[in-house]
Length: 450
Image 1 (cartoon, helix red, strand yellow):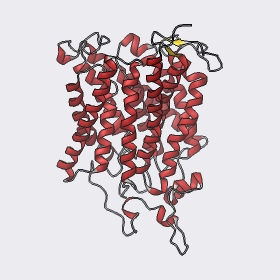
Image 2 (cartoon, one colour; image 1 turned 90 degrees about the vertical axis):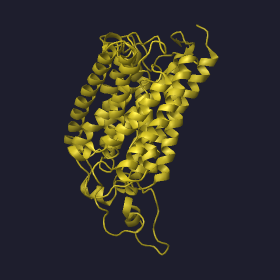
Image 3 (cartoon, one colour; image 1 turned 60 degrees about the horizontal axis):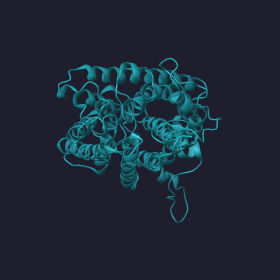
Image 4 (cartoon, rainbow, N blue to C red; image 1 turned 45 degrees about the vertical axis):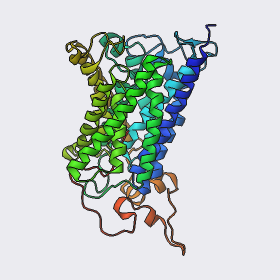
């Protein structure tokens, strides 16, 4: 049995726990951005992924993603089948037990599926979501993870770089989110009615947990504790900080006031953008990336109003757009002086456009594949068991309709129907009254992350 490296193993165990924490953080972030009467349904879609995807990953997901390459699209189905005993196996040359690496990558699979749910808040049947999560993880995420990281087509042949998930996680989830938003259609009353976040402190807490966990996500992806781990760690911090500033600057100029929701969303946009590039660029380039990503993602929120698709919590604007920015950034600022994996340096380092073209190809392939398959899956689910909740369930509250519980007990002390109050989100939550005016184009009334 190869010797276990206890230091690397300890670091990856900590990183694994940090990445798992990101999904409850996402649940809080999405839940706070949602209306009060749909907060539990929104959070359940994240928590259910922890249960479902963990089991799928153990039994066949990992071997599809990281088994020996068979055809460029998926790995050896029998190599790491979940029924096998791998207690004595060590992963590669890292000295890390195979089960630790399996657990680490399991957390990536979980949060990637959970990210999609923010696009369809307030209007999806929970059974439809679970079926979609099962099918999409199986036919999209697992093969894409292999193509990008497991020795498959995108990583090995095209040579597109993705250190921790710009294509495999964020572009992948963002493309699927757009497909679901188109199939399920607009929420009742959107965009005329106000859909303000019902709990801004919850949004900030969720963003903070995501930020904290993301150090395991990015720096942990090195699998060892070395110089690359250090650059990934500091790049994650400075890019996220700069993106926070970039988003609130846009808000300040456009809307006159910076907001806590904007700061939280900007931070998540920075985390998304730096993910693929964190180990391939210098810290100054990471800070510049964050500033650009924060500003562009804030502006990208207006796309749904211009194009008419109801992406409830702006998964497309933050994850899809942010993932594309970070992925292409490697083609501009990738440096062999930072990482030996950068065979062709970025455009601004004199390497020409070779790596940029590779990044573009990798991102485009994942975008088209994920969008197309998600569209087909969503249509199939809608036509069979049903995916879109009824308009009555949406208006009365998806929490009660799907889970028979509500997030808040706001019944008056003397009795009466509490959910009439609890179900009112945004401007209505404090005491009713007329509906708030429609938001200006591009103004976030429901922010996303990530």
